[in-house]
Length: 286
Ligand SMILES: Nc1ncnc2c1ncn2[C@@H]1O[C@H](COP(=O)(O)OP(=O)(O)OP(=O)(O)O)[C@@H](O)[C@H]1O
Ligand SMILES: O=P(O)(O)OC[C@H]1O[C@H](OP(=O)(O)OP(=O)(O)O)[C@H](O)[C@@H]1O
Ligand SMILES: [Mg+2]
Image (cartoon, rainbow, N blue to C red):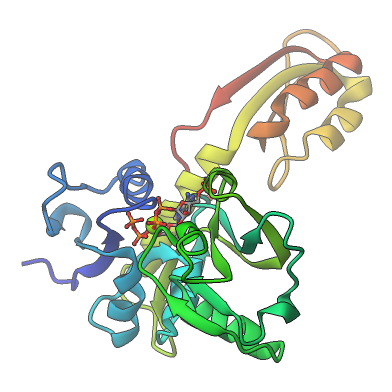
């Protein structure tokens, strides 16, 4: 038996977040189940036990203190009203939570008063509208909410929107402001001390996020232009600058956002930097 208690982590067993959550945990060095029917997996080497649960139930287990932390959607966390808080966003499962109604119906949020509004997230949607003094008749459905209007069960809906394809196919259009921008989040119980091992888990997950979002850039630049070059690549803390054997030239190394790497290379080239190389970061602790 290890002397430290295991940290017990809830992971989505199905749905949109399931594979991406397992992938992120694998990249963070944890063992993950190989059989999608496995319910529990002990990773003794890392002091962790994973419980594979419905994403909607995860905030409940964590809020009750049965499990230490969990991965779920921000929308599901809020909808559950569980006694749990977001620890860190995880950068996947991004969606918007939106109202929609038949195309051309020119709905507004105020129209929802006493109308039938179908959703799988009555806590989230009811709370949002109540704060604005709007009280619809909420019709709670398990899924495929977009079909509720066509089938005559609802006048409008509120649901997860990613690409908008499902809405378009159902002949619906968005109205009102987004209720929420959601993504997968790590959660823990509210008002309790951080469980043993949470800090290490967070450092590992953060390492994965940084490795995904940043690349390492190396280049050579003349003494004369190094200050300008460093202002283009300030790095997270500060770039590393080393002397080259060639007189008057320096080598610079800095992390840059992956999505900006091509533009930054063009900008560096334009001020005379050469031998500009980009490499992936496999893992990191910052
Ligand atoms: N198309 C999507 N794109 C991004 N995130 C999504 C999408 N659909 C759902 N999600 C997010 O995934 C989380 C879990 O929802 P999901 O739909 O996977 O659960 P579910 O409805 O219980 O499962 P299933 O749809 O497989 O029955 C929510 O936080 C939701 O915002
Ligand atoms: O904007 P889109 O890219 O079309 O994605 C949004 C759709 O994805 C989810 O459905 P899911 O497959 O989870 O089915 P469900 O509604 O039955 O949960 C969500 O509930 C929307 O219906
Ligand atoms: Mg779903």
